Image (cartoon, rainbow, N blue to C red; front, side, top):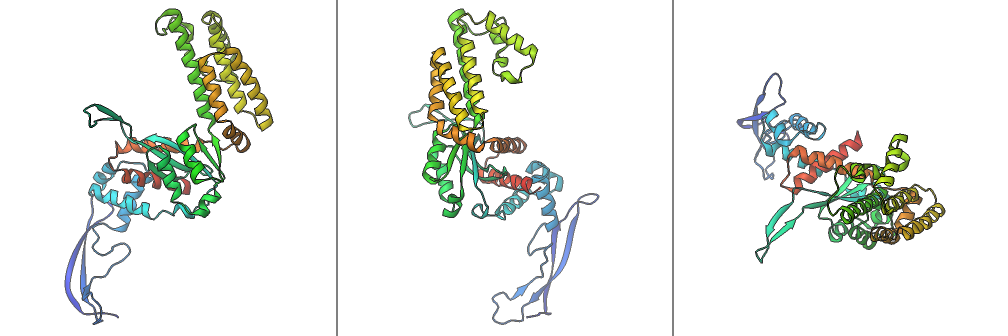
Length: 378
């Protein structure tokens, strides 16, 4: 029905994009009477895409606000102050845009990456007995390992939360997943085994090398405590060159290799430090292989190095390698790593610093998902 009968005239005040200063638009609109007797709404006002009914901001202003938050990476409070709108107006625009993102089940994903990050600062709470309990607010990030797009964020880093997110996906989506890259986490492994029985698990090589570097650090600290009965100091060559011990030998310059040899000669009388360093380097050679046959050969050499070193630290590392060996073979075969997941976590940390600490997890997750989708689209 076409109506031409005016019931009253109303004035709608809306914010618009700034132009040489703040702009406020006054729109005088007729309230028309509906000519259809069966219509429950007796009166109505015209609406346009740029000026919806009962809107307080134009659509182009909301688009500019969303672009400032997502594309420019500015804080919500800063954008609200710059456009002279309420904080909730900007955040509601971000939340509304996040709802329009494609459903995860509609995305064609074959490789996943799962990693955790800390949502906010560590806090202490009193328990029922009156003691203090440390609470670390962790969140787990599920990423498309092929493209790097963040698919979901869940509270916590245990198997129940990650498994619950995977269980919400459609059977066809879960059956399509071929490889999942994780760090050596038993919780993530349990969730994948239960919810994605057809997927292979690939362990991230960065975390394995990190465990090897931690093993070298523990050996160095133990040796100086046993020999000097104190912590390491600058006068100790092993402490002064502690970062050199953690570098890959193939990446060192000729001068750095000479300094490393001097450390082993002057500050390693028992040869335990050099033995631990050799185990670490052999693990790096193992992870750089391209075939499973080469990896198994390097693993046999690694076992000989561990047997020759015969230290608790090296045996503990060897047990970890043995426990995760099937996942290491998948890594060597597919080369699916958590590199894109770690890059996504770096972007999440920038968002957290920009927002100066989100208190509402829903707002935090909406901005993360929108930023990741915008980067992939670009």
